[in-house]
Length: 77
Image (cartoon, rainbow, N blue to C red; front, side):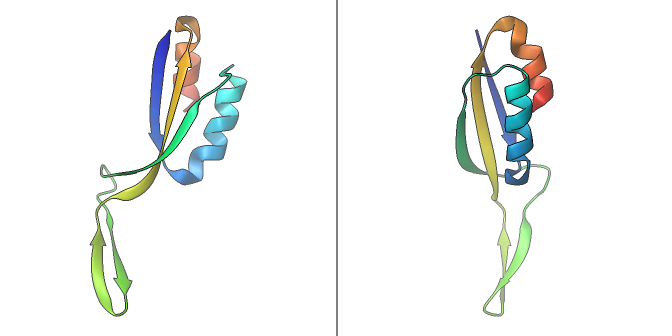
C-alpha cells in the first residue's frame, strides 16, 4: 500500500476527484490548507491599503492505494 498526497488549487478539486474515481480510488481525505510555492502570493487591497498575501488557499488530497494502482492515481492528480 502507498500513501499518495497531492496539493492542488481548489478550482481543480472536482476534476481530480472524478479522475481519482475513474482510477479506482475507493476513498480519500480532503483538507483545506494554505501554501506558498511557485505562485509566490498576491497583492490585495482592503479599505484602501495594500496587503501582500503570501499563503494562498490550496486543497490537500490524501489517498491510500494499492501498489499496482499508484501510477494511475498519480497521473489522475
